[in-house]
Structures are given as C-alpha cells and as structure tokens.
Image (cartoon, rainbow, N blue to C red; front, side, top):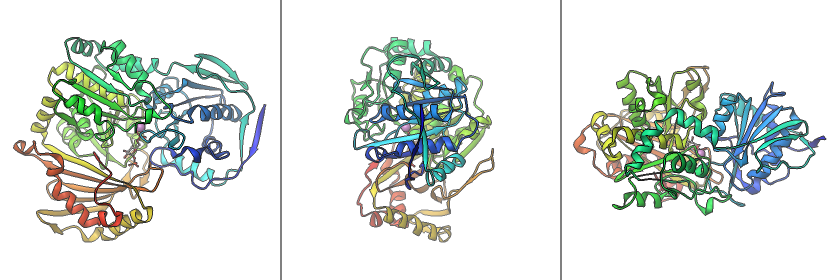
Amino acid sequence: MFKTVTTAPYKDQKPGTSGLRKKVPVFQQENYAENFIQAIFDSLEGFEGKTLVIGGDGRYYNREVIQKALKMAAASGFGKVMVGQGGILSTPAASNLIRKYKAFGGIVLSASHNPGGPTEDFGIKYNIGNGGPAPEKITDAIFARTQVIDTYKIADVADIDLDAIGTFDLAGMTVEVVDPVADYVTLMEELFDFPAIKAHIAGGFKVVIDSMGAVTGPYAVEILEKHLGAPAGSVRNSTPLPDFGGHHPDPNLVHAKELYDDVMSPTGPDFGAASDGDGDRNMVVGKNMFVTPSDSLAIIAANATLAPGYAKGIAGIARSMPTSAAADRVAEKLGIGMYETPTGWKFFGNLLDAGKATICGEESFGTGSDHVREKDGLWAVLFWLNILAVRKESAYDIVTKHWAEYGRNYYSRHDYEEVDSDAANGMVTALREKLSTLPGQTFGALKVEAADDFAYNDPVDGSVSKNQGIRVMFEGGSRVVFRLSGTGTSGATIRLYVERYEPDASRHGIETQEALADLIAVADEISELKKRSGRDAPTVIT
Ligand code: VG1
Ligand code: CO
C-alpha cells in the first residue's frame, strides 16, 4: 500500500517570507511538490499518530497537491488529516483549526496575493502546532533537507473525495473532510459584538466586501450576509476560482480599485473591504477615507476594548519594521509593550505565545491578534465594523480624530516589480556599504539621524535575524526603508517604504505622495533606485 519513490533534489526550494512560492509549471515538474512535502515531514519529529491540517486558497493545482499531501501524510505515519471541504481553508481558518483541535501542524497551500492559474503562482507553507508559520529554524531545516532528498514515501491508493464532508480511511489514516467555515465563524462571534454590528447594518449602514474571486468568499457570505444581515450581494466576487477570475487577488488601491471607487462615489456604500487570495490580508476604506494598514493597526489597538474579545485590554502591540510607527504612539499612551519585528508573520508567533503582544500588523495590509497565529483579513474587517457600530461615527471621523490625538504618520510603499535580480542586489550592496557614512549628512531640510541594516533579536527565544531591511532615519521621525521582497516568483521586487511624522493637525490633509515627495527624492538620491532598476516610476504605489 505504501511505496518509496526515488527522487533527486531541486536546488530552488528555499522558503521565502511565507513558504515556498513558484510558478505552477515549476511545481508540476516530476516530484517537485512531493520533494518539498517530504522535506517538511523529514524536518519534524514526533508526529506519529497525530493530526495534520491541510487546506488551501482554492487556486489552480490546489486539489492535486492536497491529494499528494494526504497520501504522503499517511505514508509518513500521521494518524489523521483534517482537510477543508473542496480543499478550501483560508490561512487564518487553517491556523484556527490547528489550534482548536490541537493538531501537530498544518500545510497551507497558497501563494497568497500572487495571481493564480496554470501559468501563475502556487505555494506551500508549513505551520507549527501554535497555528503559526514555521519559524526560521524549521524553514532552514526544510531547505537543507530539500538539497539532499533522495526518496519520498506515498500511499498507492485512490484519491479521496474532497467535496463530501465526512470521515474516510486512507491507507489506515483517518481523513476528516470538514466545513471550512463553521469553526471560524464561531471564533469571530466570540470576539466581536455581532448584535451591535447587525443593528448598525439594519439601521442603514451599507458595507461591501470584495473577496476578489478568492478564498474569503464563503466566509464573508456566511458572516456578513447570513449572520450580520447585510443584503445578498454585499459580498462581491464571492466564489473562489482557480484563477481568481483573472483578478490579482491583492487588496490594495491598484488591484481593488473598483471597490475603492465605489465607496468613494457619493451614492456608494459607507464602508468597503477586500481580502487577498488566502484571506489573511485586508484593505479597509471608508467614505472619503482610505485607511492605510499602518493606521488601521494603530486605530484597532487604540479602540480594542470596544470589541468583547479584547474588552480587558491588550498586552502589547507588534509591527513589522517597515510598518509605520503610528501604533508605537498608541502603545506609548496605553503604557503597553511595543515590538518591532522583521517582515513576515512568522516573527510574531513567539510574542503572541508569550503573551507579550495581543495585536500585530504589517504595512502590507496584514492585521491580526492572538486569536490565531496568522494575520486575518476578515477579523480586521469585523474589528472595524465593531468599532464603527459602537462609536456610531464614520471611518473618516474616527481616522481624523485619531490623527489629531496622536499625530499623523504619512506613509507610502513604492514597489518596483520584476527588476533584474543583479541590479536589485547591486543596489542593496551599495547601500550597505554607504550606511556608516550617512548619519549627520543633510539632504535639503532632512538630516540623517541614523542608518542601519535592521537586525532582530527575538526577546523570547534569543534568535537573531540579520539583514532584514535598510533603514535611513531622519531627525523628527521621518524615514525611508529599502527591502527586497521574499514572495515574488520572477526577478526581484524592490520595496521602498517612506514615512513622515506630522504632529500638526492643520497639516493632516495633504495628499500622501505630496507630503512625502522630498523623502521619495532623497531615497532615490541615496539608493540610485531609478537608475539601477532602469525604471522611471514604481509598478505599484500603496
Ligand atoms: C510580503 C509582505 C509581508 C507579508 C508577506 C506575506 O512579503 O511585504 O509583509 O508578510 O508578503 O503575505 P515580501 O517579502 O514580498 O515583502 V501573504 O498575505 O501575501 O502570504
Ligand atoms: Co495572504
């Protein structure tokens, strides 16, 4: 029933910011997915007889890899696999299942915000028993294993019917096909004031969610339309499709522009939200107010006690380094801990487990809390709806009042996608060499206070992660940050993050790019970004 298959290593299976991501044809190479899955199992210990959670965002190749993973889990000795019906589990829902049913870990199949389809992206990520992405110690071990792997084990049996809920036997292992939505909805009901939100919607508050043809559709329909009483059709693009209907499932001002325009129109909805391929990102927009992810983190933290699940207060806030310091001011006022981590949710796990942080966020449209160990798109949307329903004010008023109280951190990210890898690496190397010469230099009215390559010392396990992004900090709290993306699948993506702190409320109404123009120019001067990338302008501005 089990067979051992001879294989040869692929050299390119190094996990990035969030698992292994490649084009589908790369994954379709002989034994490519199998090698990586076996390398995961080979890097773990003590899972015999235990439970594994498997699910994905429904993108092209999801079902095929799930069948492989099920048969390989059986051959490696797992006792049970819980898999979402149809192979569907949003990333936060998978994290919840791992925690709730005390699974050993989980395999999440997704390339998140990257496009899907036969020639687009696919991905595999391993999550540990706390429900969160495997820390670097494990992803490093998985990569090392992929470099020498020579066999994998698999059950030689028929496929499981993924569409039928129920319990099945696969070569002696139990497979439980579960409703992907139910447990997640229960969790959200515990955290948020559903009756208040329902009453607010019944009172005429109009909300729309764009699921972008990706995984949150069934979750959003169940919660927003069935539980909270929003009219049918309030969730758009709600059927998960293998190619996301041709959409780029990245909720930002470029890819969710239709939703944005709709909310901005005078007759449009009061509030709109969008989520990404695997359901862990969120974009929120109120009438005349796009809420930046960095501001969203700060505002959620400042208003956290309005949600029943956080009524006792929060222990601390964590944000990734490139995320704006808006949340830092909230932490300061609340007198709670503030943690700055490298990019990627895997760095929040220890802080959440240790109870040091309750709420976490990234500038890349990611917000979450200790309810799971992933960022959670719908959670953030519900948090906003909870705040709006209780305060009975518009998002515009909530955000502008927040700025008036704490000051405004103008913030923007410029992405230069599919840049030649050597050119991108050359830029970073040149910047590193320059770092020590920058402090004290002035660029117009801007004086460099400090410059470094961010390194993180994990306060819980003492691990150190170096080279996590180049920061140039100016006097007064402005800064520019340069990083190379770790999630792309072709060429390099350079990310430039720009931030300016403005305490003066009379200067809070400036258009963002205008408010940041001098910093953007200085960033280019210091890095030669345009010259080296051969580009006149960023591909995406968020
Ligand atoms: C990007 C974001 C990062 C996020 C990661 C995974 O990584 O910048 O903040 O955690 O994607 O998000 P990078 O290395 O490309 O900058 V998910 O939703 O898209 O898995
Ligand atoms: Co995602």
